[in-house]
Image 1 (spheres, rainbow, N blue to C red):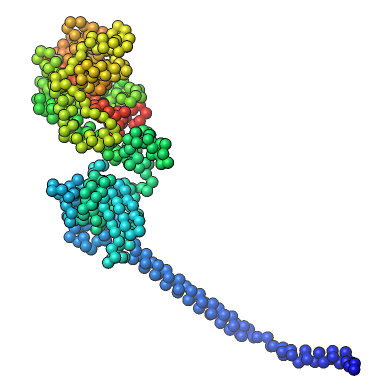
Image 2: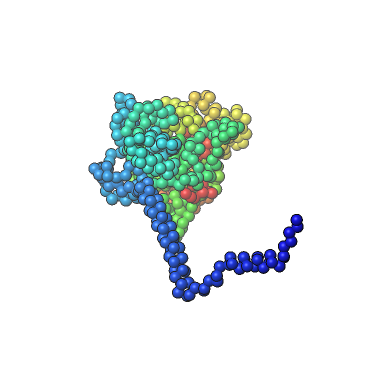
Length: 575
C-alpha cells in the first residue's frame, strides 16, 4: 500500500507549528528600567570589590602584625638595671655617650676552667669585640668573638623550646650579622673543647647580643687570608681550593684590615715594645728624652734628599734627623739625651728596606775619653731590647713567628766591634772586589759580612768601626791616626744596617774645614749649630737608629713596610 502525502499540506502544517512556538515580541524597557538594571549591576560589582579590598586589608594587616612581631628593633641600652626591659637581640643604637650603662666588660683571656681564670663555668659576663666568624644553621648558631686581634672565644646559641618565638627572633637576627662587625654579647661561661680558638676549654652560651658597628658584607679581603703564611699559601696552589695570595698593594691600600691579622697586629705591638725598652735602658743609664724641631732652615744630613715647604715666604725643610739639635743639647749641658720621632728622607729609593718617613731612635751623649763609651751604652741598650722582647713579649713573638719564621737574634755579652780593615779582608775572602777599600758597602756585601761574622763570632749583632771619612757626614770626627778614616760606626742585625753613629766633631774650626772640603755651604741653617760649639761643648758621640728597620730585621720580615703602620715610600702617601 502506498500512502501519498500532499507536500503542500505538510509545508502548511510546519509553518503553523513554527508560528505557534515563537514568543510574543517584548516591549522595549524604559530608560528608568535600564538605569535601575545598571545601578543594580554596579552595586553588585562594588560590593564584590569592597569584599575583595576588605579581605586584602585584613591580609595586609595580619602580615604587618606578623612582621612587627618578628621585627628586630634597635636597642637603646641605657642602664644595666633596666636590662630585662630591653630586647635580647638587635643592633645597638648609635653609641653617643648618652649614659654609662653600668655593665662590666670582661677580657677574653680571662675566661677558662683553670684555677687562675677570672671567669669560670657558670659565670655570666659581657664581652665586646669583633665578630671573627659566624655560622647559623637551623636552630643553632656558632660564632667566634675576637679581641686584640689574637684572643678568641667561641659563643653558641641553641633554639629554646620554651621560648620558640624569642628563639626564632634571635636566629633571624644572628643571620644578619656580618664578619668583622663590632659586637657586644652577654653569655654564660660553659666548659667546652674548642681547638680553633685561643680559649680552648670554655665557650659562652649567648643570652644577649647586639651589633655596635656593622661591617660591610663584601670586604676587600678576609682577615683569615691575610693571616696565612707564604708557605701555607704556596702549598695550597696545587689543591682544589687554593688560598688567595694577597698582594702588597692591596694590603697597604686597606692597611687597617691587614693589621687585624694576628701576626701583623703583633708586629705593631713589638714595635711599641722596642720603643718602651729603648726608653727603659736609656733612662736607667742617665739619659733624658728631648723633642727637637721637625721644621728646620736647612739640611741636617748632607747627601740625603730633603723635603721642602714654604715657611711664611722662606723655604724650610722637614728634618732628616734630629742630629744638629741633639748635639746642641750637649752644648746646653744636657749630657745624655735621646729622642723618638719622625725622620723624613726625600730619596727615590724603591727597595724593600727604604722608607721616605720612618721613626728615628736617636741618642747623643758627652764622652770623657773615647767614643767606645757610647758603643758600650748602645750595646747595653740593644741587649735590653733583645732580652726584653724574648721574655716580656714572648706571646707576641710566638704569634708573629707562626706566619713569619725567625729565630731570636744571637748576640755577644760584650760589644762585637770589627774595624774597617778586618771587614775588607773578610769581604775579599768572600770573593768581592773591594777596589781601593774606600767605598761604601752595598747590600750584598753587608749580607756576606753578616754571614761571615755569624760564622766567626757567633753573633747576628755587631758593630763596624772606622768608616772612610769621605762617605760619612760632615759632623763626623776624623780618625786621629789617619784622617782618611773616621771615628764612625754602623751597627748590623743579620747582615743589614740598622744604626749609624760616630763621635761628632765638636771643634767649630774643624767643622768649618770639613764643610769646605765637602763643598757644603755653611748657610743660616748651620750658623746656630756652629755657634753652639764656639761657646764651649763637651766631646760627644751618638747614633741614629731606624725603628722600622730594627723591627723588620729582628723579626726576619721580607719588607720594611710590614714593620710600618702606614708606610710612606716614593709611590705611597696614603692611607
